[in-house]
Amino acid sequence: MERLFFSIGCASGFVGVALGAFAAHALKARIAPEQLATFEVGVRYQLIHALALLAVAWAHTRWPGRWVQVSGWLFIVGTLLFSGSLYALSLSSVRALGIVTPIGGIALLAGWLCLLWAPWQKTP
Image 1 (tube, rainbow, N blue to C red):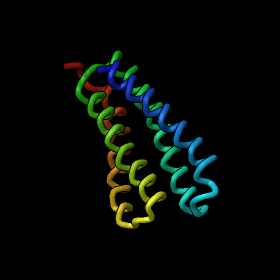
Image 2 (image 1 turned 60 degrees about the vertical axis):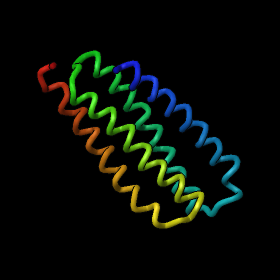
Image 3 (image 1 turned 45 degrees about the vertical axis):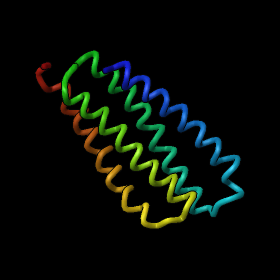
Image 4 (image 1 turned 120 degrees about the vertical axis):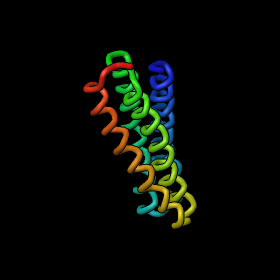
């Protein structure tokens, strides 16, 4: 499981850097500053949670168990929903996509709580 979370974290970091560069170079002149700022928030949270997935991979080697795994999956789902909805919202201006963003944020918060709880639980 730690290899999976580590690999997804690395891939997410790669995509986050690529999207950040894309925003800085290709989107800057094409979308409104508010949309660009929204896109950049998505990039920031994606990169933070790419690192969080690396922490999950490490934590899984120390405290293997369901809470570490749940935190990893919540970080993945949360990043897809939170950052993904911000990317889509910035590029399409479809305001209805904003409904998805808080769901992703809640998943990210829950991921941190699960990771906090993990070292205090007995291993399976």
